Amino acid sequence: MLQPPHSSLQVAAVPAQRVPVRDRDQDAPWHTEAVCRRDEAGLFFAPSKEPTAARLSREEAAKRVCARCPVMVECREHALLQPEPYGVWGGLTAAERRVVLARRRRRDMELKKAARVTATNRIAQAG
Image 1 (cartoon, rainbow, N blue to C red):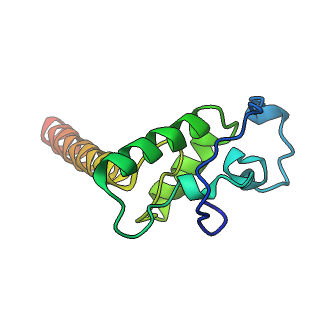
Image 2: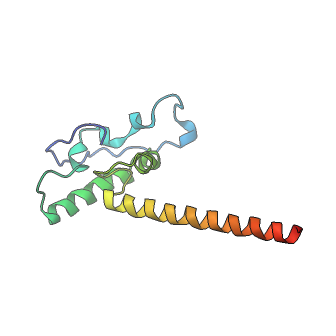
Image 3: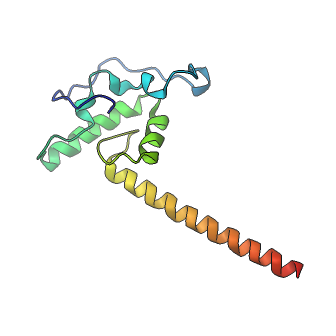
């Protein structure tokens, strides 16, 4: 993810230890603790013309790496804010991130609409 994709599909055998956010060095960028920095980047990006079954298997392996990463939430938010159009970031595929973003947009629109209705009702009650 933070390195160019490799052809290797190995998953590191040594599990990462989760470090609570408050105990991390706040000056270091979140990605310095990313498990995917350990030569597993080939898992996170699709090779050209990858068959569907191979893609699904690779994505599941990538998600298993993400699941044990101490900075998974930060990675996911980065990918949602950018937005990253390719690869598995923070345990989500590009398609899954598009769904999350669409839900966030809908929720934001509903909250704005509710705020306008509330403001209109307050004005009507005050008048």
